[in-house]
Image (tube, rainbow, N blue to C red):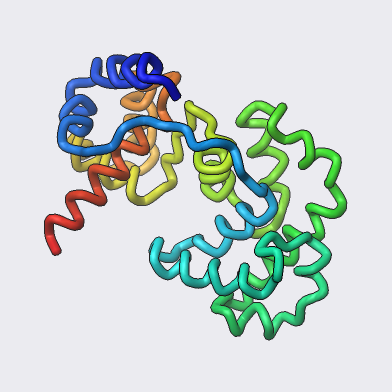
Length: 212
């Protein structure tokens, strides 16, 4: 991403005065890594990370990849593994089932997955959430970190949800109405909601470190 694009994103997000303060309080700068994604293993990683801290999830994911010489397992290789082998590296019984569900889906729907970069965000969500164990949040993480889509708003991410409630002082007790308010707030960030969320994560991470 060039400097001009970075400045364009910052200028747009800073129209929201609260987001402008968040940006000022973090050292984060919008950037895009070269695409080196392996969608299947990234999806496995997203499943592993469900309801786990980043540190624990990274440890388990590393152990999982070490089961394979290439560090990029193919779906059939996972199907061939005993469930106990996957459990030994840290996957719960439920996540073992989810990972194997994913492997079966990847084989059956190979043609669609091979073309996934051509799909719109909601089309990708609709496709991948057909896999048992893969919910909207899991796919949104793939959209953000693997496919690098610029306008994703993962409202079900606890860090994003709690940060917005705190920063924007959303006191609405009704969960449905609260979510509606958060969506309205995020509309201002379009078409760069991904970057706004990255700033919220960076802000929350910095705040957490300050408490340590």
